[in-house]
Image (tube, rainbow, N blue to C red; front, top):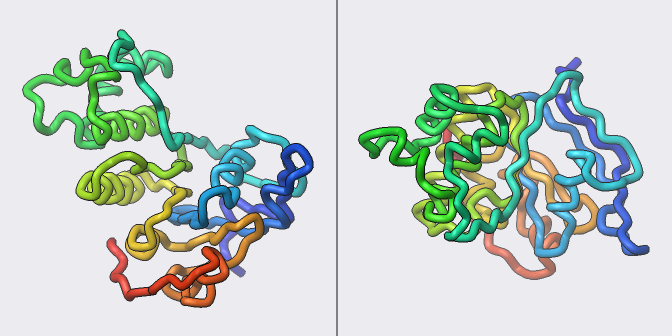
Length: 237
């Protein structure tokens, strides 16, 4: 008998203004997995994450293991350069300060090239680069020690080199902290390289399983409605 799932979703349906966004979605997630959610634009991927977080009404059941602490990083966070909110003040929104904040910033690689933590802590959020802001958001998400991280396209707007750095960072944090990660991605290379399992969403669940087994040419054609080439990838870790 297998281990009890950390998350079990059964017959999940979401309807907005009479339009069915998600239909009869069922899957489970085991503790310690990285699960990638794949699908075309408008397929319901972000809606699925919001339903899992109980942020929107839905039909069906979403059952998390008792005592789970979740953290969510949205697809975008627009920060005006003129916003006078420093990194340190941003962490105060979670009542986090001092060595607690320094540690998580170091864990995500924000302090390795700075002479002093204050170089980052006193910097306004609006003056951070895209990659720096994403690392700060990841640090902010782990500062209160969650057991599950949910990411809506964690590298949106970051260059290719920065994207690989972020995904490698997520792998490291997952292993060091024993996390379970659910993330949305459009990048097949990311899915093959970093995910234990994949959920293919296009209103319904069109495929799921180990990426190398689930993502064949037929599955991708069903998902995207067009020919997609599949290449072999070696998974990291």
